[in-house]
Image 1 (cartoon, rainbow, N blue to C red):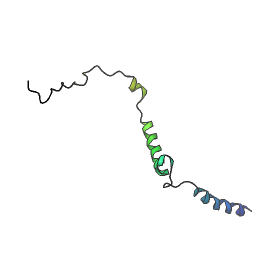
Image 2 (image 1 turned 90 degrees about the vertical axis):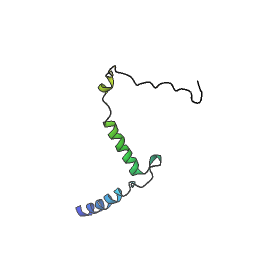
Image 3 (image 1 turned 180 degrees about the vertical axis):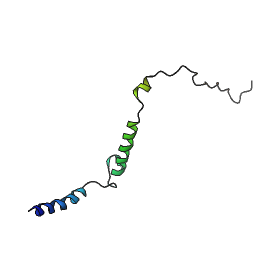
Image 4 (image 1 turned 90 degrees about the horizontal axis):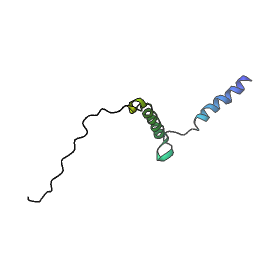
Length: 79
């Protein structure tokens, strides 16, 4: 009796795993399922590397600002 239950279970497991989408199937947003998975993993990595709130709360030191460029002189006019 045990073998009669085990055999259908062993046959159904591979059949059910074949039902999932393959990496080349179209996915959301015009990308394949594999590409969507890779994008999700990359987004998760970026979220993990976010700057801590403490670093954003610190005030920058009062140093020299960006140098301003001199105003351009008109070209083609003789003075």
